[in-house]
Length: 251
Image 1: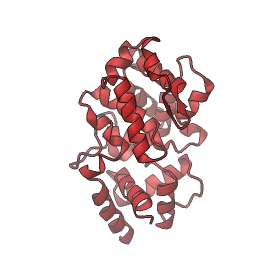
Image 2: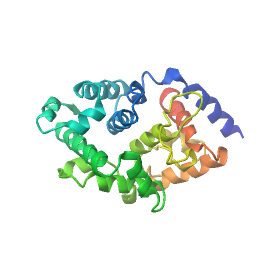
Image 3: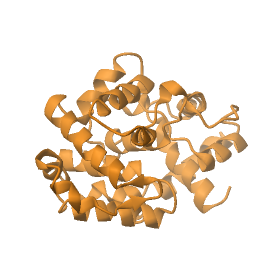
Image 4: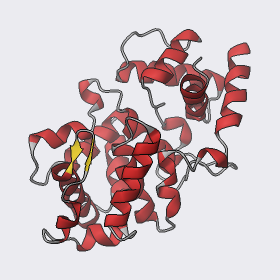
């Protein structure tokens, strides 16, 4: 009960509209069209490692280069249009990767019915790990360089898939505070897996919510299962708490 009380306090503190502006989730919040939200959110989540200010700055730059119409840009883009991305780089995610992502997303919307449908089809195979793996498989059916594959995690190979799980939280969770966007209807909040990284893992272990030492998929599942004990309908809401305690409060 003490752990739940601590997490509830932190959750309510950080699951607040004031959280949005300085977080990568601010990028999809800038759009209203479902497809714009999905694409902008996926691209922002993809580069969401490093300093948050730099992530938001670079994700905003991608949206600017797409004339703030990400879905229209993706659907209509040609090789010539991709020249606007020349010189873009965020850590190890470079112009080649970004251009590959644009054509992969175009293929998903034109040939597979969109991102939500692809994730949902994979989920029927066994759970969120299969949903992500299926999306990854479809995503890379377009020609691509091997180097780009590292930017879409594969939970079936053990990755915690932190950034994709964060993106899925944005798309699926919906509550009265309006931080997560909750635009997807194919999933329930209790089917999500909690994003796991160094900060949340450290806090989770300190609180006794995680025993596994590696920050891998099995650890993400263990953490999520323990969070379901605290809130069976919306366990991943505590991602806000773990993040806040780890990053802002150095718990």
